[in-house]
Image (spheres, rainbow, N blue to C red):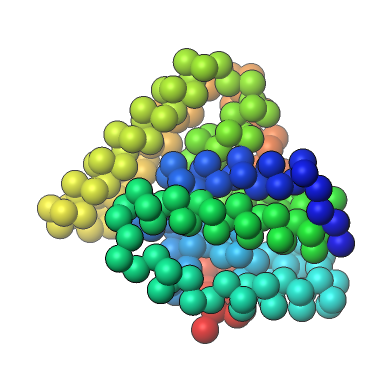
Length: 209
C-alpha cells in the first residue's frame, strides 16, 4: 500500500481530463458506467488480470468500487458545468485511492491503459501535455478543439443528429484535429505513453450491478 503527494497531484491532473472532455455526454459508457474512468476500467476482470492484481488487491479494488455506487444520485439535477466538476472530483479521488492499492508497476500499467482507452482525448490531460512538453499554443489549440467538438456533440443530440454515425464522424474529426496539433516527435512519444496494446473487453465488468 502506498500514498504520496506526487500521486495525488497526478490524480488531479487526470481530473482535468474528466472535467474537460469526459463528462456524461462524451464518456465511453456501457451499462451505466464510464469505461474510460479508473473505476470503470477496473470493473473488467480482464483489466485486473492485465494489472496482475493479487487476491487481496482485487478484493480491495472491488470494495472501493462498490463504495462508489450511488454517485448517480449526487449528480442528478446538476448543471453541465457543475456535473463535470463533480465528476472530476470523483475521478481525482478514485485515482488517488486506487493508486494506494497498486504497486508502482501496476500503477504505471493502469496509467497506460487509461491513455489507450481515452485515445486522442487524453491529450486534454495536463499530465499528458506535460510529458509531451506541449507549448502553451498547443495546449490552447487542444482546449479550443475540445470546446468546439463538445458544442457539435450537444447540437447533434439536440437535433436528433443522425444517431451513432453522426457521433462517429464527430469523434473522427476530434481524433484528426487533436493529433494534427502534435509534432512528429510528440506523436511518437504519445504512442509510447500507451504502452503495450491491450484489447479492451466489450462486455460489462465485475461489480457493475
